[in-house]
Picture 1 (cartoon, helix red, strand yellow):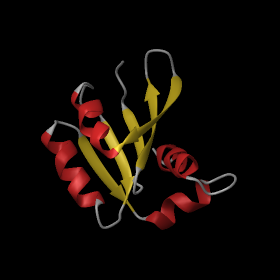
Picture 2 (picture 1 turned 45 degrees about the vertical axis):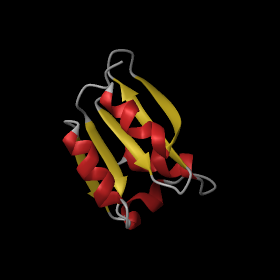
Picture 3 (picture 1 turned 120 degrees about the vertical axis):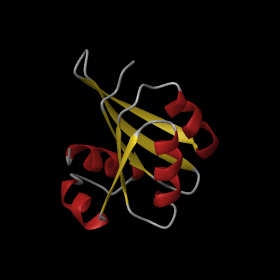
Picture 4 (picture 1 turned 180 degrees about the horizontal axis):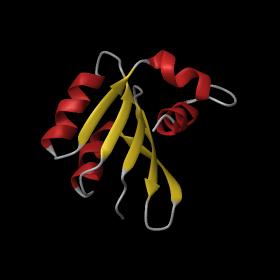
Length: 100
C-alpha cells in the first residue's frame, strides 16, 4: 500500500501509527514494536511521517529520512486539542495525523 501521511506516536514499547491509504481513502492503524518500525517504513514508498517532539523523536526522524521519508516534528501542545476522548497512544497518533 502507498501511504501519503502517517501520524506516529512514540512510546516506550509500542509505537502507534495512523496512516491514510490514498487509493481507498481508508485510514489504517498499526501497532508496532520498536524493532519493527524501520522494517515497516523500509517497505513503504516515501511519505510524510509526523510525530510529536520528544527526546527520541529527532533520532527517529533521522532514521526515517535515511529511508527516504519526510519527517515532520510538531509540538505536543498542537496535537493535544485533537484528542477526542481518553488520552491513549492510538488517540495521540490519530490527533497527530489529523493535523495534516
